[in-house]
Length: 260
Ligand code: NAD
View (cartoon, helix red, strand yellow):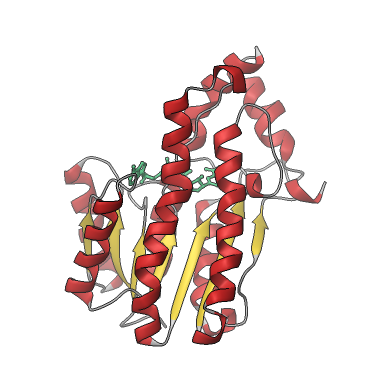
């Protein structure tokens, strides 16, 4: 279904990005894998995708907090595959601390990676999609694009920001066969969530088990983590013919969290 198309999935060496990359590869898209990690593991993951899905893929280690490295990522993709048809803005980090103690450098990192990087990738990829007459932009927002939680000032600000960016881009490209949507997962068990359990326990003065039960899953009426595979399936739908009229949406995949 996506044979001959090229997808950049940022932050696809781990977690949700890795799941979305796999789902798109299963539909035949060629992939550009990005993110940090052990080079040997990344190369072995790329080789496995090539072998199991019959696609082409290469890894680009751009640090997406740096605009010049984002330009290099898009240029390398264009050189190798001739364009970019699908852009998944997924790379993100989190930091949990009360506002008065929130480290300014963490604020800058989170806004830089979770929001500004998507501006740069989008501004660079839209002309390529326009030239091809087809494009799909998928932004990994969060339930925190719709509601807030304490101690997550930068993350909630960035995610509300990317919801706004999604709507603006969708309107600008609406007549050009390019869609732009935001997926808003609830809690998904990935290294990003695992890494915030200890900080949340400290900020709230509770145990790590209590964080999982009373903070994370308490938010989700289903009482289950959202899975990486579920998000991959939804991304796949957005890239399918059935998703062609879906644009400018900020869609929760959150086990009912934001219905409350
Ligand atoms: P993760 O930590 O498993 O993966 C993050 C990815 O981003 C990794 O590949 C990492 O190497 C990459 N990355 C980090 N810094 C980078 C940088 N400077 N440049 C390039 N790549 C960089 O996280 P995840 O849970 O899979 O989260 C992915 C996205 O989904 C994030 O935007 C996150 O905010 C969002 N999200 C996650 C959850 C959740 O519960 N896990 C919920 C809602 C939204």
